[in-house]
Every structure is written in structure tokens, then in C-alpha cells.
Image (tube, rainbow, N blue to C red; front, side):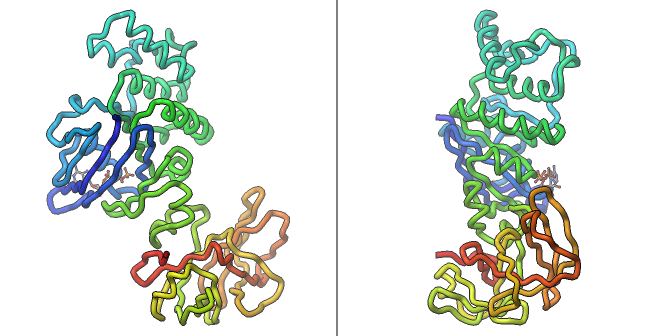
Length: 362
Ligand code: ATP
């Protein structure tokens, strides 16, 4: 079975710990994206799986076999890098066939396998061209074809689309995802682009400062972020994270002092277990209802900046307490700079984070 398991892996470069005690299991046929800001340890984690970097501690198990001491070649992994290099003097077809030649596979078998992956990646018509005669998107597909032409234990991709322009990235995301979903291999993709992760991954592992902060489906990490960091990292525009004081909980509602006034929020009953004290209230910019009047329970703000975003408008506003708040409204709702806004957070989409930053959930 093509599976990847990392158990408690750590990588120290001298005194600096780049990856700390990371656990992750990737099932056969599953695509997991490692997502996080620059320097959080994504590439180092991938390189340890590939055998390009030796883990300081922990185990790397691929297809059921512990791999820590094995060289990259012996791990039978296919890797696609950001800076893939095609051999310029070989045709596209010969480039794809290269890994098979290295394994000493016969001519007829090579031709059959190259033909098969060329069909999967729509490269049949360019097999006889030189790399200089194909587009960037085709070059990228050749790099993927070269990786899948063997029968590797699993696939590792390091920022595979970052060299492509926005439109091509969009197309390639779908194509790579479609190819991977038919191969039944465990795949890990490193990216710092959340859209790439949200669209390509079955599950996303969000990293920060060398640690995996949350692993979940794209929907889970968006709808149920485990902590303030994940909440702020996933979703565009960013979730509003508002300092507040939890006063108490009763009848399914938490009373919080938010923006110098008491607001009743329908939140997760687990909040009942939290004593009064400082919390962070998280509300996504699309999770507000704008009402005409300043009434009990509204957050009141003044519009400072308006950003048209096509079908929607992003409003940057300042609350009465002086905090920034982002609100997304439909384009047809007219807004003016200086206009007062009265906002009611959607109770189903309001998150409470305890003082340690962790989401409060049942
Ligand atoms: P990016 O998105 O910028 O590629 P990343 O999340 O992939 O970042 P890594 O490349 O894994 O991050 O690096 C994690 C940390 O480890 C960084 O602070 C980096 O400077 C450090 N690091 C990586 N390789 C080495 C090395 N060989 N020696 C010392 N420090 C290293």
C-alpha cells in the first residue's frame, strides 16, 4: 500500500529546530498539503520524507517500511520540484522516459508507459518536440509525467505551480488533482498558497514555527480552526479577531464585552466550561449582517476604506473602541466612507478562542 507516516519527526540545524515533533499520516490515494508561512518547516519536512535531509528524531514510514536510514533512491519516491529541469537536448518523450531508462526497462515497455502518461497529461501531441518548443504549462506537465511514469511508492511535490502565471496555475491545479485522484498513491504537496491547498488537498496540515498546528479537510480548517493562528491564516479576507471579555454563559448564549458593550453570542456550549476572562472572538468578514440601527448586540463601526472585489465589496471599518474590522457585503449594497455600520455576527459562524489561543469547542 502506498502510504506515508511520519511519527514525531524533528529536524535540528545546530541549535535551531526547523521541525518539531511532527506527526502525519497520508493514506493511499490521499493528497495532503503542507501549508504555512515562509520558514515554517514545510520543505524540511518534505525533504526528510524524501531522504534528502536526515531526521534528528522520529520515524519515517513509507509503504509500511521504516525508511530513516535509506537513501532517496531506495525510497522509491517521485518528487516534483518548483525548479524542475528538463533535458533541453532530449525530446519531451525522451524526457518522460528518462527514469525508465535508468531502471533498464525494455524499449517496448518504455514506449507503452510513456504513451499512457502522455495520454493522462494531454501531452501526446508534443512528445516529439524539444522542451524549448512547448509552453510553460506543458513543461510543468512533462515534469509531472516524468514523476508518475515509474511506479513509485508515493509522490512529493514542492511548490509545483509557483513558477506559473495565475491563470495557468488555476488550470494546472485541477489537472494535477485529477491525475492524482486516479493513481491511488499517497501524495504530499508543499505550498504557501492557501488557494492551492484548499483546492488540491484532501487534507491540509497547517504548520507554524516547525510545528503542525492542525490537520483537517479544507472545510474543517476553514470552518473549525483549532486556534487563532489557523483562523487568521486560512480564509480571505482574513478572519476578524477581536479582543473581548467573556462575562458568562447561559441559555445557549455567551455574554461578552466586545467593543465596550455587552453582546450576546450564540456560541458552542463548550464555552460554558470557560470561566470569565479574556477571550478572542473570531468572525469572518462574510459572517456579519449589516442592520440599519444601533441596537443591543450590534458592533458599531465607521467605514474607513472601501475595496471593490467584483461581486462583493470589502469594507475596512473602525469600531467605536478603536479596533479594525473587515466586513464583506454584496456589491449592490451602497457604502460611503464615514458611514456608520451596525453589525450583527452570525451566531453559527462566531468562534471563541481561549486566552491560550485555542478554539473552544465541544
Ligand atoms: P518557504 O515557504 O520559504 O520555502 P519553508 O516552510 O519550506 O519555507 P524550510 O525551508 O523548511 O521552510 O525552512 C525552515 C527553517 O529552517 C527556516 O528558518 C530555514 O531558514 C531553516 N533551514 C532550512 N534549511 C536549513 C539548513 N540547511 N541550515 C540551517 N537552517 C536551515
